[in-house]
Image 1 (cartoon, rainbow, N blue to C red):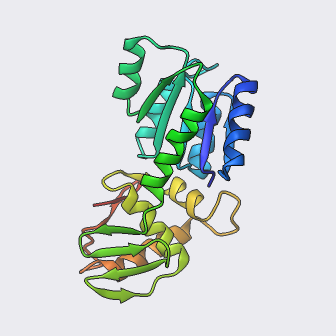
Image 2: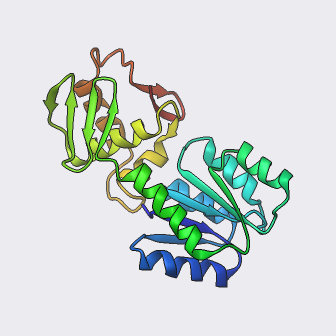
Length: 220
C-alpha cells in the first residue's frame, strides 16, 4: 500500500511533489486522471490522497465522493479553484482539508507530516475491550493476550480504523495481501472467521465484525 496517492494531471507538479515526498521517506503513487486514482486506491489503498479537482474525465469531487463511500483515509484537495463554493463542496463531500494552488510546498509537507504523526504514529488502537499495540503487533481482548498472525492483526487494525464503514472484500484483500498475491480472495473469509473466534463473544453471532452481504465487512 502506498503512503500517498497524488492525483494530479499536471505532470510537472505531480512529479515535483512526489520527489519532495519521497525525500521524506513516503511511498508515493501518481495518478493523472480521476479514474486512475480510484483504480489505484481500490487495488492498493493509501493512507492519504492529495487530490486535484480539475482533471480529465471524472473530476476530483467525484473521486472524493467515491472514496468516501468505503474509506475514511485522509484527503487533501489541492486546487486552483479557490472560490468559497468549491471549498465548501469539497469539504461537504468529505475532504479533510482544502488548499489553493499555487501552494507553498513546505506548508503542504508540514501538513502531511502532522497528519501522519497524529493518525498513523499511534502506538495503540483501542476499541472497547480490544487493545492493539501497533509497535509490538499484539492484541489484548478483555485484558488477556490473544495470539494473532501478522495478517490477522493487519486486517483487524484496518477494520477498526474504518469503524462503521463497510469495506469491500476486494479492497480488504488487495490492501492486506496485495493485488499481485498468489492467495485467493477466499483467504479473506477464512481470516475473518479466525478473527471472530478470537474477539467475538459468540463467533456465530458477531457483534463487531459484521458481514455486509454482497459487499464486504464492517467493524462496529
